[in-house]
Length: 336
Ligand SMILES: NC(=O)c1ccc[n+]([C@@H]2O[C@H](COP(=O)([O-])OP(=O)(O)OC[C@H]3O[C@@H](n4cnc5c(N)ncnc54)[C@H](O)[C@@H]3O)[C@@H](O)[C@H]2O)c1
Image (cartoon, rainbow, N blue to C red; front, side):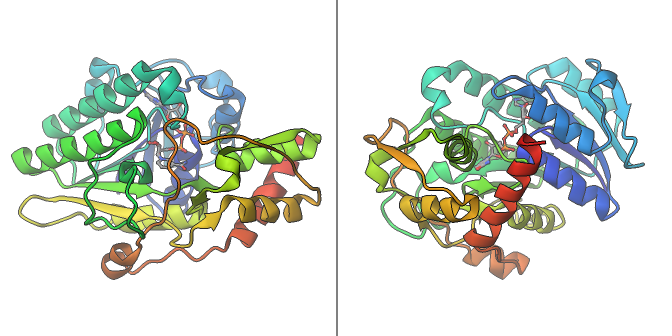
């Protein structure tokens, strides 16, 4: 299959691209390499895939020096013309849209970035898929669409009309927009509600990396809601395996639009998470207890029954194993 992966320099995109290439797919990766977090990490991920920073020029294709079937282009999905040109020149079997302005907290600070990337950019991709049809349009949604839901675990059948951040609202909007394109134009679409993803090459704005950095430097970590929060931390390899299964199985219903949770299904109390991290690092955390933050939710907890039933897959990595892999990578990457 020939697959377009957007957000290919990002955390999940990087891992997905590698797995697709390793199983023999042809991949075109795009990313605008924005500076929401240090671009050095994005370039390092690309370099791991054989894409050298100095070869990346806007709009030009770089062929991987490591993988014969990988090409990368610096493209912004907000650029309608560039996206159209890409679809005109390539013929994709499937799209995995991971490009987005991620992060709940930053959506309080810079709401416009979310509308531009997650709504305008998303529409550009849908329009391109309408003009140049694909077999399957898969996109990242988020567990944040469950917002203030108090019923757990969160099921795909739950109502999701109570978002608590603009980020969540854009992800829910993506699900609605995709549904419309499936209904009107018959494009098979699947939205994936990822639950707090962590692992090697992870995001510097998320707790595992923020906490590890602070603990190793002997600096205090910020613990919100006095630690009374829980998250369904999901290891990156489990996410990628779920994504692969979904890409290969496009919905075939009358309106071919579907949504899946991809999560571990075992929420962890934040304090237990911190203790697991302390054990892996071999050092105690100094904690500053703070109140709940705007836009945050108390818990996330994936009901994974649908993914298991339809795709035959369930996440299998324990937090202890996953954190140990993450800390090993962190030390290797930052202490070299
Ligand atoms: N990591 C998680 O825990 C998590 C949880 C739920 C949902 N998601 C979603 O999964 C997707 C991937 O997340 P991630 O953790 O890999 O984030 P990431 O920020 O590491 O990756 C996203 C990539 O998209 C690129 N990008 C952003 N806007 C773009 C644009 N307009 N054009 C082209 N590229 C653009 C960024 O440069 C970045 O490299 C996102 O849609 C995110 O919202 C992630």
